Image (cartoon, rainbow, N blue to C red; front, side, top):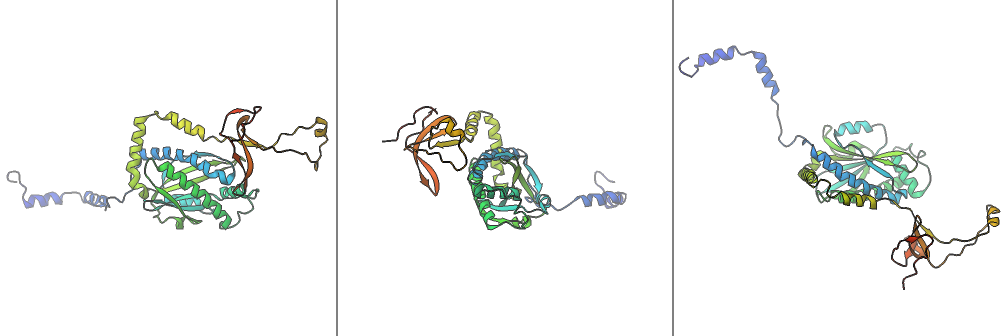
Length: 330
């Protein structure tokens, strides 16, 4: 060896004494990597999605109202990233309604999974009856069920658009319904999706669920906005908690009733009433509208869109049940 330079013979001697397994391990550790193809690492974005979908849960309650005739309790579960194949394998062997929804201008579709029990509850609530268990032997959904499902998904699309509006202006549109999850979304088996589960508590005590699945690759363009949303929430802290509390209070369902008549009868006549007897009543010109014992206003009885309705004759006011209803507008 002369100076600081190795001769060719010295280099060959060093290579000859290098252990072969180490060289093999180094070669095996190298693998091909396609930049941009790996799934993004999600951290704070999941928290932003949670805030976004908690807001959407209130809109989901309103989407159920015209179908179930009441607003069920809706609870958001834990949002997690899962392989699409793992989710599909857990749904095999059972009929599930997978609804395809387009989110423009993003590329790709999201899925909304609705179980058959909830579909039957929607049909029962809309048409009346209790036939939930009688129709579940079929291998596919009936046209009536698909139409009811479509009305629910369209209501959910409107709620999703409002919930996402602070992050990105997305337009959600119902595309179709598929009973086979493999045909509903064209993804590779190892592609990741974000699972947003919702628990639906029906009025008879039963619980059902709705799952929203976002392909992670589809959400890539809006991930920076989600990240900034989390940072903005941290800066603002709880400064807007009063507004959120007010929004939650305004979303509470209040039973409203219309009093058509309040006839008076002798106690002796009441105790002698039997099925088939008639009790004459006289409906006045004004029908009172009450929430609990609070008088909201008065109006006239009529019909709108094929349903009985009340046209308010005066602005809404607050009063007691025993008070005089406001007179009709002149």
